[in-house]
Image (spheres, rainbow, N blue to C red):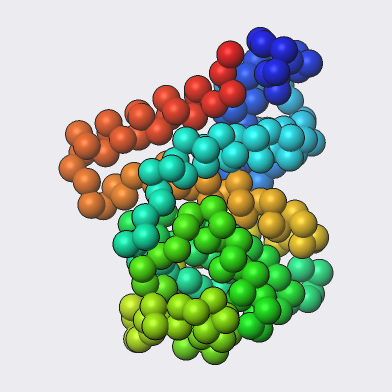
Length: 234
């Protein structure tokens, strides 16, 4: 390991840490499910170790994935699909905003306590700071989007209509499956952290199997796994 390696002071091999984090973030598994699956493979760790690993390494892996992909994702001629979904934290409703490009790639996730103009404006500014400005913003009929885009001088780029925003709504499904497995979230900060990590990992392994031939799917899956195994490598 190099001096800058995040694995420097860990006795466990990077390969096992990457595997544990991938299993927990990518699949709808609990911490104890991951512990049991690793036990079957001869790896003896506690579920609390899995929790520590994902908190420590999940954001690092997600950041490296984004750095490798973000330059190729910038385009002023893309259509962005924007949508929000409510998530309860300790019985209180919060909103998870998500921006998805025309290919289904999740660009940004953002958690707020409200879904008014101020929250929509903050979400749009954060997304555009990383990915530039889209040519078209596809939204539902929530007035907050129109008000925010009007403040940004891009109200003419908004597009609304029935079923036109299904791409953004479908992007919530993998997160909803993970939310049920985790028995919901207890802090807003944890929700924001996990959503960001989950979206990056999901982007990497989203090979659109139903749209690909078997050989093409296998090649994409192998490439995604190879990229994952090379994260933070020496």
